[in-house]
Structures are given as C-alpha cells and as structure tokens.
Amino acid sequence: MILFLALLFVAVAIAGFCAFAIFWPLSLVHIRDRHPQLQQELGAGAFANPSAWRWLLARGYRSADDRNLDGLANPARLSLLTIIAGLVCAGLLWALSAVLP
Image (tube, rainbow, N blue to C red; front, side, top):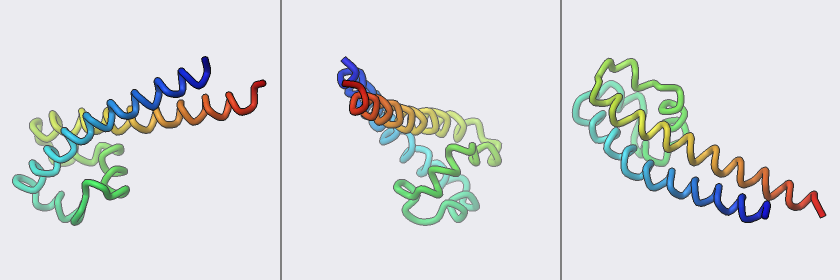
C-alpha cells in the first residue's frame, strides 16, 4: 500500500510538470517581450536553469509589478512546488517501505 501511495505522489509530480511545461515558458516569453531587465537577470536558457527556478520560487517576478506576469508566474510557481512536494513525498514513502517489513 505504501508503494502505491508513493506512485500516486509520482503521478502528482508528473501533473505538476505538465502545468510547469505550460506556464513557465509563457512566463518567460512575457518576460522576454515586456521586461528585458528581468530577462538579463534570468539569463539564457532559463527554462531549465535552477537559479531561474529559485528566482521563481522566491517570487522574484513580483518586483516587476505586472499583474499579467503574476498571472502567468503564480501557476508556474505552484506547479514547481507541486513537483518538488510530490517527489519528496514519494521518496519518503519509498524509504519508509524499505524500512518496514
């Protein structure tokens, strides 16, 4: 049962990745088009850049004071948190299944 729940958390992480793959590129395109100073801060290849993910998790987009960017970056942030939480919970349950008989 524990491994089944771990697998469900992996499924939650996959769902979070699907949302992330939609909203994060939209956020980056909006940043590219309307906020060149933020684009320079994020650098090239921000989609798969862990420092850009830290910027997203820290709500760095709030400094732009752009409601449209907030509307794109908030779901990207929530989906990234979903990915992280799903994988952490799955890993903890897997570790628990290895300890229990």
